[in-house]
Image (cartoon, rainbow, N blue to C red; front, side, top):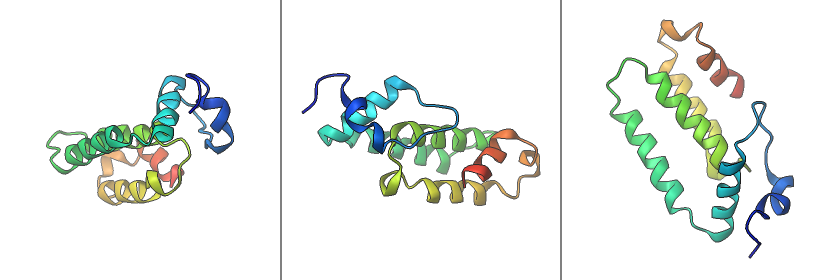
Amino acid sequence: MSLEGDEWELSKENVQPLRQGRIMSTLQGALAQQESACNTTLQQQKRAFESEIRFYAGNDPLDVWDRYINWTEQNYPQGGKESNMSTLLERAVEALQGEKRYYNDPRFLSLWLKL
């Protein structure tokens, strides 16, 4: 068990860098949760995003996908199988590829670049 705030120093070589950087408080929380094997909160949040995507009835579905992907990047700093990032990106692109209004949207382009 590490001291509070020490998670970064113990895990920094395992954290994937992001072009836009990481939110340090989220990173510390994600690393602490992984160490304590307390992933139930992450699973609940993941289910909430999945439910929001499934039942979304608004006029900007890209917003939900964008928030979900950004949340995943911040809360799974090591990437890997736990994050399912490649599957998530593929699902987002497939779901939105027929929407011509997103072809010039920087958020949609960002999904393609991350893929």
